Length: 429
Image 1 (cartoon, rainbow, N blue to C red):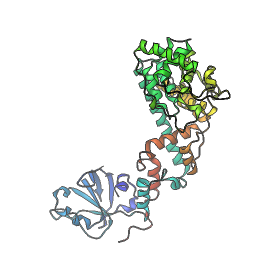
Image 2: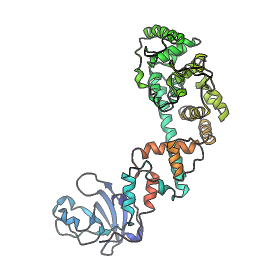
Image 3: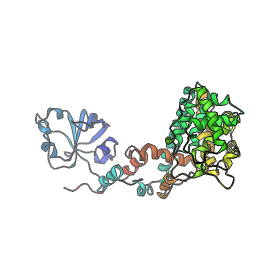
Image 4: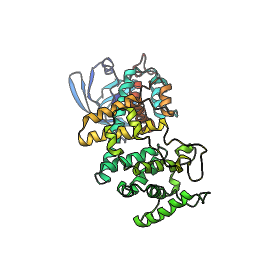
């Protein structure tokens, strides 16, 4: 009942008091989550007279008396009593009668409401989504996609300022975070903050030193590896010991990196080696990203070759019998979504280049939709996955509303309830 009132989910013909007076709501008031009336500071018009005060709700009108409100002065400023079952008149502590409104709801509205709020399903609105007009879904996902872009742009702005107002530093940290491919994004973020790009660029041309500094600071050059005779590992350890002393470093705990249930090609060792390769080339990526105009050029930015060792190693224990690709085509597309697009979008906001923002949006619209368990669940619910712009909206919707169980605040949840609230009949006595 509070949800219906707060969101004005009624029709004008329903807004008539039990004694025949017409009501229009100027302001539904503020919902009260503590003791006292359900809504404070509402303003309504009863016939031609404007009333200001509080709103109280009950399933049955006689609950007013059962709860003792008729003798409680806190309820004397209630201007409207909203009920599902009109089974009696109610009054204030001074005996004056309070206008009463019968609020009818669809028979199954309460069940739908509770399903959205408390159902254990991963996507409780799945069946209802299939019945929603596509225009509502498109409108919601468009808003969610822009919200996701704005959130990422704000994060890049923070990296920019935290890194000494350097665009290259913001781009470096954004790339590092993206190379974690969600599973290891957080430890990559910590690593990039602990090793500033300027330190790494001082070692430009010294591939072993850059790799040693990153892998060592990540805590991945430990003594726990079986193959302790690996020459490359021994060289990296020796170089890191020198650099650790030079910079006064305290390496990360290696347990921060996740390896279980992960494809060997995605092990953090190889991804850190990939980050090192970008820096060994001078990290021109930061400026080159701003010139990207299409998908093919974007993919070429990340088409980097690793050294001989990492072409045949997943980590220091696991060796491949064949040459390994640095990044799969799917990984390249994810880097476009998570690096190129947000950096272009953020740069456009920060430095006033609106054409870059349009270019970033165009890249998302040209990319194939992301396929994962989240986007698949929405697809099975009838949501059309047109492109990466759509799936970015789905991921934001999932993070912002579904995971937080904020279905009542979600545009789609609200629309589902709004189209089901009006009854063909009301609650029975």
